[in-house]
Amino acid sequence: MVIAGFFAVAIFNSIEILIWIFSKFKRRKNFYFWSLVVAALGILIHSIAVFLRYFALAPNVLMCVFTLIGWWTMVTGQSFVMYSRLYLVVRDRRKIRWVLILIITNVFVLHLPVSILFLASNITHSTQFIEVFNIYERIQLIGFSIQESIISGLYVWEATHWLKPLMDMKGREGKRMIRHLIILLVITVLLDISLILTQFTNNFDIQTTYKPVVYSIKLKFEFIILNELIMLTRLDICAHPRPEDFSDRNRCQLASGAATTNPTPIHDGVQCVEDVERVCTAKSRTNHIFDGRFDSPAPSSSLEPAENNHHLPVVASDACSTVSEGTKQ
Image (cartoon, rainbow, N blue to C red):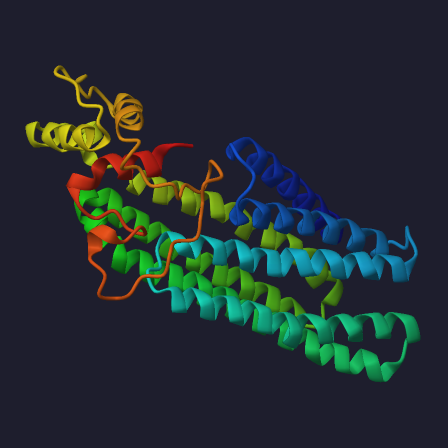
C-alpha cells in the first residue's frame, strides 16, 4: 500500500508539473524550460518503471534500464534546473562554472558506477555485485543530496546579498521572500535526510518509490521560488506612484525615443506594466525566464559598474526595465 501510494503521488505530481510548465512558458527555447521538462519526465519514467518492476508486470532487465533512465533525468535534471536559475542572482560567472563542473563530475563519479552495479546485480544476481551496489547506493544518495544543498545554498546566499537593494525597497515583502527561500531550503534538506534514512534502514523498495515523490516536491518548489523572485522585482513605484517616479518613467521614454507630451498616468501595477512595456523597449533587458528569452549573461568583472550589470536591477531609475523583466509572464 505504501509503495502504491508513493507511486500515485509521484505520477500525479509529475503530470501536474508538466501541465504547469507548458501552460506557464510562452516560448520553449531556453535551457531552464527543457531542464524542467526533462526532470519532470524523469520522475514519470522512474515511477512507472519501478512500479512495473516491483510488481513483476514487465521484464526485469528492461525495467531496470528504464529505471536508470528515469533516475538519471530525474536527479541530474533537477540539478540542471537549479543550475540554470543561478544566472538570475549570481554575478560571478566562475561560481556558476564550478557548479556546472560539480554536476558533470558527479555524473561520472555517482551515476555511472551505480548504473553499472545495478545492471550487473540484476543480470548476474551475484552477491558480490549486490553488496558493492548497496554500499555505493548510499554514497550516491548522500553525494547528490550534498550537491543539491550546495546549489540551493548558493542561490539563497547570492539572492540575499545581491538583491538586498530591492529587498530594502520592498520592505516586509523582501524579508518575507528571503524567509521563504530559507524555509524551502530547510524543507529540501529534510526531505533529502528522510530519503537517506530509508536507505540506511535497509528499505530499498521504499526508497526507490519514495525518491520520485521527494523530487516531484522539489520541482514544485521551483515555481514557488520563481514566483517569489518575480514578486520581488515588481517595484513599489507601480503600486504606490510618487511624483518623482513619473520623472523616472519620462527619462525612460526619452531614452526609447517614444516620449509624449501627455504621458498616461500610472494607475496600478497592471497599467504600469503595460505602459512600461510599450515605451521602454530600448531599455528593457531580454533575460526573462518564462517567455523564452533567458540568455546567459556576458562575463563581467567584479569592478564593473552596477548599472552595466545585467543580473541585478538595484536603482529606482532603472525601474522600467526591471518591471518589464520581472512581470512579463
